[in-house]
Image (cartoon, rainbow over all chains, first blue to last red; front, side, top):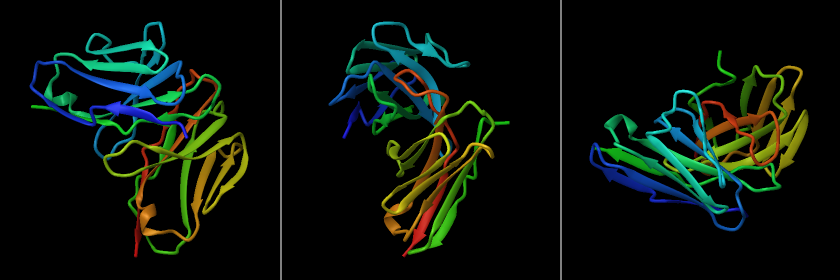
Amino acid sequence: GAVVSQHPSWVICKSGTSVKIECRSLDFQATTMFWYRQFPKQSLMLMATSNEGSKATYEQGVEKDKFLINHASLTLSTLTVTSAHPEDSSFYICSARGQWGNTIYFGEGSWLTVV
Amino acid sequence: QKEVEQDPGPLSVPEGAIVSLNCTYSNSAFQYFMWYRQYSRKGPELLMYTYSSGNKEDGRFTAQVDKSSKYISLFIRDSQPSDSATYLCAMSEYGGATNKLIFGTGTLLAVQP
């Protein structure tokens, strides 16, 4: 089946630094990838929709200059959390939908802890 | 009011029980409905995918959609301890590569051996 890979699976960074999370579709081309954030015991909140070759579409309330998204190829999207603060600590999950399919597959998620 | 409402639980059942998980929604434009299972500290895993109203069965899992009531259900037969996880409903207006999902808050299920 379709596989979406995220890296790193967990990361600890210092406050004020930036951290990049990668999302790769391993066996299919993903024209669109989605980035979610999930706080403990809460549901997934969509942050942005990442479109290959164009600018990401951010959800209301999500700072595009803080959460930089790049979708440079049909198999890779990256999320960079810039100037990270402790309140950015969360579980970040990407998902991908193929060009022709209706189903969405999720990565394993990346745990970010900002200290 | 949230677009998708889901009882967060926790729901505790004995092994072998039939589990019923539900979501209600307010947007009548939703046409695609999904159930995901999420184990602790892992990404969601797609369990069931249905379009419009009706039932769909896959092994021990049955998904039901009642668009007239804006209500969807997931039934798990012969529940196993390995089914213990958070179950998320999700839905979207359109299919296709670019449409986004709206999630419920998830129901935490614990199946006791």
